[in-house]
Amino acid sequence: MRTQVGIIGAGPAGLLLSHLLHLQGIESIILESRSREAIEGTIRAGVLEQGTVDLLNATGVGERMMREGHVHHGIELQFNGKRQRINLNELTGGKKIIVYAQHEVIKDLVAARMDTNAKIHFNVKDVSLHQLETSNPVIRFRKEGDADFDEIECDFIAGCDGFHGPSRQAIPASVRSEKQKVYPFGWLGILTKTPPVNPELIYSNHERGFALLSTRSPEIQRHYLQVDPKDDIANWSDDRIWSELHARVDMKDGWTITEGPIIQKNIVSMRSFVCETMRYGRLFLAGDAAHIVPPTGAKGLNLAVADIQVLSTGLSEFYQSGNEEILNRYAEICLRRVWKAQRFSYWMTTMLHRDFEHSPFEYNIQLAELDYVTSSHAAATSLAENYVGLPLELTANHSVTL
Ligand code: APR
Ligand code: PHB
Image (cartoon, rainbow, N blue to C red; front, side, top):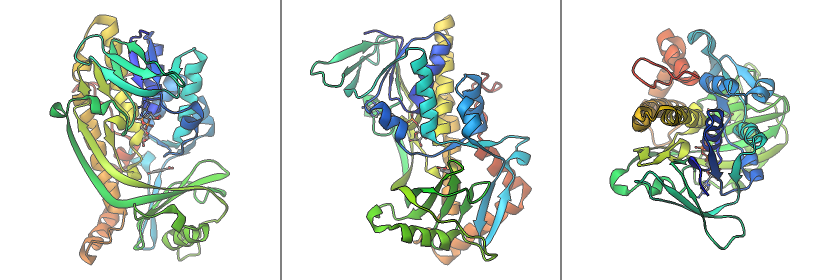
C-alpha cells in the first residue's frame, strides 16, 4: 500500500488530521488498534475551547455539536463555603466553551470520514515504524486475523497513537527529552442519570478534596471526585460517592446535588508530560502521543486539535508549493503553546486539589489564590483567556487562519 500521510491512531488527533487533509485533497490511511465501537464508546472529558468549536464548524463537522452541545459562558469556583463565577464571555471579549463529550466528537469525525470512503483500518496489530529518516517512511502492521504483515509506504507518518502508542518510542532516546510530573491525585468520574445540577461547571476546592460537577445532556451528568490514584473503584459504593459529593459541593443555603442512578464509574490517575521533540525525520507526533495534561484545565483534546491545525497547515503548504517552513518549525510552534497549556493545567490542578501532605500554611495560600483569582479583574481575565484557549500562533505575527 502507498499513501501520502500514514496516520497511527483514530483518536481526535488522527481523525481530525485525516479529515483536514482530505479537505485539502491529501490522501491518508488511518491504522487503529481498537474497534470502531470501542473508540466511539470510551468516556473521556468534554470541554471544547472556542478555537476547537470554530475549527469543527468551519470544516463541516460541527452540526451535531452545535445542536446537542451545551454552550457555557462562565464557570463557578467554590471554596470556603462560597461559589464565585468567572464570566468567561465578558472577560475574553465574547468567547465561550461548549461542553460536548470527546467520544461524540469522535463519532462525528468517523462519520464524516466514512462518508468520503476514507481508509480506516480498525483492530490492527503489531504496528511499527521504519525508515523515518528517509523521504519514504514505512508503517508495518497486521490486519485483524492476518498472520502476514502489511506495509504502508508514505511521504509522512503522523503519530497520533496516544500516550502508550509506538510512535513516540520510535524516536531514538538520544534525541528525545521527556519531562513529567505525576500528581498524588486521582479522579473518580461518574456518569449519572439525573437532570443538570447547575447551568455551568462547578469546580470545588474542599478540605476533603476537589470535586467537579459537569454535564453531558439534559438526562446525563458527569461528576468527579478527587481520590487516591491507587484507590480501587470497588471501594466506592454509589452511596459513598453521593455522600462524598454532598460533603464537597453542598452549600449552607440548602443548595444540594441531586442523586440518581450511577451508570458508569472509574478512577484515573493524573500526570503532566511533554516529549521534546515532537518531530523526527518524517515522523510528527500529535496529541497525547507527545503530551499529557491533568484534566483540571480541560485542555487535552484542545491541545491535540491545535497540533493538528499546525500539522495540516504544514503538510498542505508542502504539497502545494514544496515549502517546508511550517513542517520544519512544527515542534517549536506546538511546544510553545503546549507549555502554556501545561502551565495553566498545573496551576488549576494545584490550586483546586487538596494535597494532604501540605501544611495548613500551604492550604491557606491555595485559598488566598482562589480568593485573588475570583476578586481581581486582572487575575480572573488571565484564568478566562487560558480556559477558553490561547490563540494559536503560526508565526510571530500571524494566528492560524482557517
Ligand atoms: N496502533 C494503532 N493505534 C493505536 C496504538 C497502536 N499500537 N496504540 C494506541 N492506538 C490508538 C488508541 O487506541 C486511540 O484510539 O491511538 C488512539 C489515540 O487516541 P487518544 O488517546 O484519544 O489521543 P489523541 O487523539 O491524541 O487525543 C487526545 O484524548 O486522552 C485524551 O485527554 C486526551 O482529550 C485528549 C485526547
Ligand atoms: C468533563 O465534563 O468531563 C470535564 C469538564 C471539565 C474539566 C474536565 C472534565 O476540567
